[in-house]
Image (cartoon, rainbow, N blue to C red; front, side, top):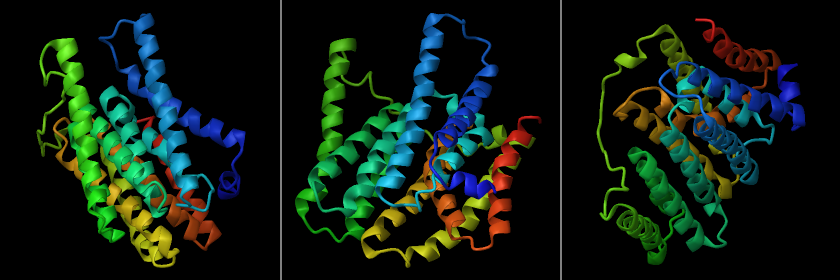
Length: 307
């Protein structure tokens, strides 16, 4: 019953997904007490909410354009539910912006399976990831996806290996010029803070512990079947699926070493994790188990809101 409803793309489905994301967004801001409720504050929140909605639509586009699932739109439902699991993921504007640009970069990386406009895709991917790193430094780790993709595609064209670094250099030059114009200094605009912290004390709450346990358990379980299922995919699509699993690993690595563990860092993990879990739901043969699996992911975040 649940899966049959979500198997088709319909306005009601997207309305539900956006409602869940909106609920997570609002709950994350209930605790904000030091902000003055004025026009500027409301305008900023509307912009950040649009970025959240834009990330959902962008994720849906990436998945459908590259056939990463069976086009049942489970991935955007899961993404919105993950936001509700850890509502703090929508609280940091820098992380929201950074993740959006990472998704733009991921879109171009996954599309490398097509040999058309390879140079442009490589430049765009590196450019967007470099922009993402300006808002959250450790987002630069997603640059590894470009290098690994080139290795997996056994691309020996030396120009293809140089282009991503030229894109990063372009961002550096542009930002340096902007920094000089605005602040009369070359590096003020850069958010270079490669700090690392392994203090997980902020996660010592019932809500965090349940959310993290459920997400990791379902994610690891789904990843096992996801990796096994890659062999059944068409050869042209296998690198794209491997890229997603690597993106999830990078997202997890960012969570582990994030200098300020306020929950927002989990956002980098959600998009690839949503794709992985959506693929697992696709291959579940037993209808009753599929219903329970998806039902648990839907019910738990709403229960956590009562804690």
